[in-house]
Picture (tube, rainbow, N blue to C red):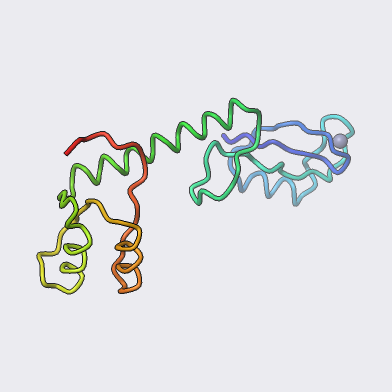
Length: 143
Ligand SMILES: [Zn+2]
């Protein structure tokens, strides 16, 4: 079962359960959906507000609590990314730019690394076609 928030042509909002998304489409196409307030069959799904967008470019709707929850989930996700990097990549410290370049040029063993780089170093790497990205999240480990 799936619940959709629906809105009629006159702006009445209500929700209804359907066996599936297809069932909604079928019933709507057949004119079987009716607004519970005014009875019109001109009913559309309301836009849903997911807690967090996978594309990360949608501002969550809803009250402040929802936005805060989304922000917390995003922070938790960022922490996971960082934990993955810290668990799987080799820390190379200030040698990051040199090492990333060496790996890119196949002069060094192919592996995941992370470390410190200045803004200029990062910019140079990107210009040279070396894929680098800042690690999101809070720093946990001290090296
Ligand atoms: Zn209505």
